[in-house]
Length: 153
Image 1 (tube, rainbow, N blue to C red):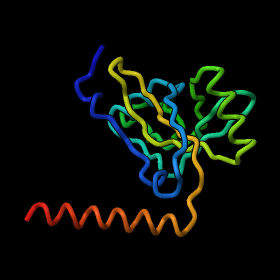
Image 2 (spheres, rainbow, N blue to C red):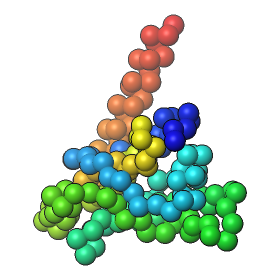
Image 3 (tube, one colour):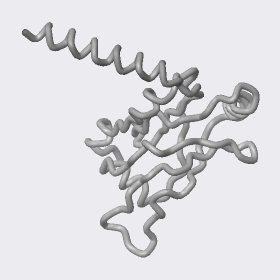
């Protein structure tokens, strides 16, 4: 059953691209309960404080805030529970290896609903930016804004 509004569910974690240099991206399915997908379809998600962890050869997203469903009852979900991500074995092994060896972090970048109505989480292996890099990012963003402003006039 396709919903008309699911195509425009595309929640980005702007903090991730500012705080980290994204090295490699992956798209994972998320194990959800019924009330969570309903909240996601309503856009009630906050990625900003979330992160991923490999535990027991499985990848989990932690601190991902999916607001409780307004129409939910006693069976409503817990907003910030750990949720298992669905990736293939090779991807999980790669993520585990890179986080242990290279000290990279796994950050959620974007949450979206695909054309089949399934919630997907785009995650990335990321390297923390130094203060200097953050300043460079801000300068580049400001320069782009100035150029865009000049083009409009």
